[in-house]
Length: 344
Image 1 (cartoon, rainbow, N blue to C red):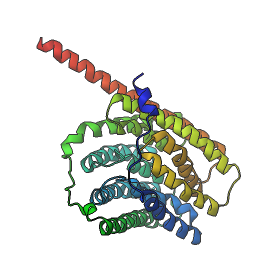
Image 2 (cartoon, rainbow, N blue to C red; image 1 turned 90 degrees about the vertical axis):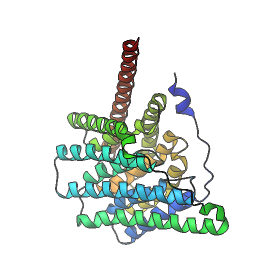
Image 3 (cartoon, rainbow, N blue to C red; image 1 turned 30 degrees about the horizontal axis):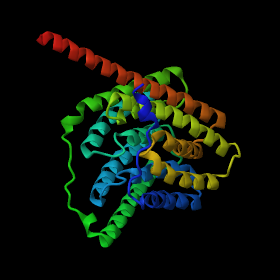
Image 4 (tube, helix red, strand yellow; image 1 turned 90 degrees about the horizontal axis):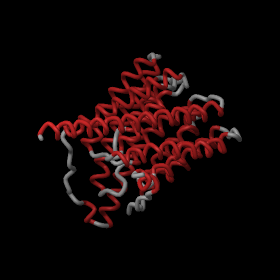
C-alpha cells in the first residue's frame, strides 16, 4: 500500500546541533522555577509556551526566528483562549465552536508563515487542553506563564542566532522570509475546521471525557501534503501514542512526587524535538508521556482512566481525520472525472 513507505521512512537529521539545547533551556528554566515556587500544577502552561522552540529546526537563524514568532502567536493565543474558556466555565458547545474556528484561522496563519512543523496543531492542542483545566489562580497568571515561556524560547533562539553569526557571518543571511498569500490556504483551513468539528462532536457523544484529544488528533493527518502522507501520519499518531502510553504507565505506576514528574517533563522534551521532524511516531513515544504527566500535574485523575481515555480519543480523532481526508480526496477525484467527461 502507498502509505507504507511513508510510515517507515526516517527523515535525515537536520544539521542543527544546538536545537536540543535551545529546547531544553526553554522548558527547563520555567519548569524548575515553578517547582521552586510550589506551582507544579501550572507546568502545563509553561510547556505549551516552550513548544515555540520546536519550530524552525534546520533553518537559517532569521527564518527560524520568524517561524518561532509566528508559532508563539499561534500557541499563546490558543492557550490564552483556552484559559478564558476554562475560567468562565464555558459549555462544551462553546469550546467546540471556538476551537473549530481557531483551527481554521490557525491553519491560515500557519500556512502563511510556512511553519515547520506544518499546520496549527500546537495551537489547537493548547486551546483544548487549557480549556479543560480550571485554573487554580487568576486566569491572567496562567496565560502569562505561557506567554513568558514563549518569550524565553524566542530569547534563547535570538541568543543562539547571535552566536552563530559571530562564528559564521554567512548565517546572517538577509534571505527574505516568504509569506504565502492568505487565500492560498483557504481549502486547507476548511479541512481543519471539518476534521476538528467532526472529532469534537464524536468525542462528546461518546462521552469519553477528553474530547480535545480527539480534536487535536484529527488535525494531525492534515500536516502531510498528499493522501498517502496523510494516512501515514494518522497511523503514526495511533501507533506512536499507544507505545507512548506504555511509557506513561511505567512512569506513573510508581506515583512519583510532583517535583520528579516535573524533571521528567524536562527530560522528555529534547528527544521529542529531535524526532518530531524525522519520524512522528517515534517522537510521540516521548511526547505522549510528557503531555500526560503535565496533564496529571494540572488535573489529577486515576491513572488507568487517563491512559484509556488518551488511547480511545487519539484513535477516534486520527481515524476521523483519515476518513475525512479520504472522503475529500475521493470527492475531488470524482469531480475531476466528471469535468473531464463534460469536456469530451
